[in-house]
Image (cartoon, rainbow, N blue to C red):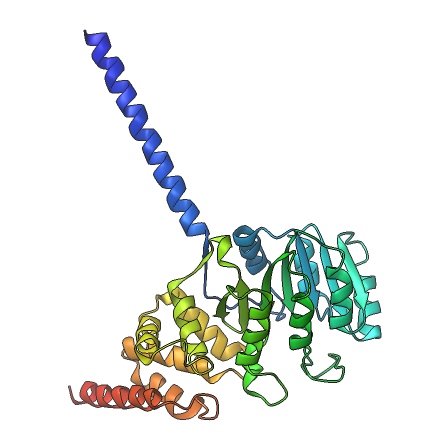
Length: 329
């Protein structure tokens, strides 16, 4: 009888342990499928190894394609993570120098030419692949190359749409530049992405647009989702109502310290940060009762040509009133 009871209790314990293991695995899986809001660059303004590893863990691509090789920082980092790397450069001198510097990296294929034309040739060789695309072939001043226009991103996206047999994770760098006349608008870029896959999820992670299929089961973090709604509202007012935007920006205002640090990086690491970065950082300062910092963001850092909406004045008024109340104590 005693042995039977011991055996029964032992079996019950094993079942509890099994359930606990399944629960832990489930929690780990859900955590690992969250795309964070982050400043994705290293101190050389290349995609960092940390960011590339995270993208690999989330999406598991087997091919990495980059437009705009430049000096090969992102190219080299990608070669450490992905089995196949293709990179395209327009400037012949830069192409030769970078190809020579990375000549020992056997998993990198270097291509010289205009990115839409070369991208067309590369994608024509792939079928049923999961491809991570880093579209960074923009003219950025200095030694960077330029073809007939400052950015070929729309043409690149149109090429990608010709090859629906592959699954794509699309990253577009320098998305802050979309307010400039030399760039297509964010709306035009998103419409071009939806021609590839109408169901693509569009997120704005720092200075990078990330588009991916919902079939991957990857979910944006709460802050990433909120920032994406805040940024896309002006371009797609038919898809978001004001209540959604205010709720999203309330979520941003309560961002945890690690996300506030990422927003601070965005505001301080770029030559010409987007006004949206100052909006988001300013919102966190209201919640933290750092009103002087918040007032500076809303009074001096937000360009009304980029964000022109009554809610901005509302945020500023709230901060000024709270600041006065705080000073009177």
